[in-house]
Length: 104
Image (tube, rainbow, N blue to C red):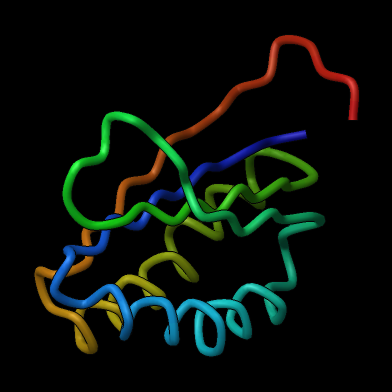
């Protein structure tokens, strides 16, 4: 199992537009992913966020190779689409999670 966490931080000025994009476009892109076995698309609640909003996409892959293929191909495409739509108003952060133990 190989896990990837992607956080999308949207500025307060595009919150409504981002919510609509997430519900339709981003969700549809995630549904169509072939390599990801499972995913969780979440709104992030945190005391540390004072401006804007964070959305997290947790992706679970069969192995590291599929995760790396996703990062190099699909995440690049997703990032380009979001940057075209929102410019610098949505920042994307990827975090590689390497499970040591799990119970899924």
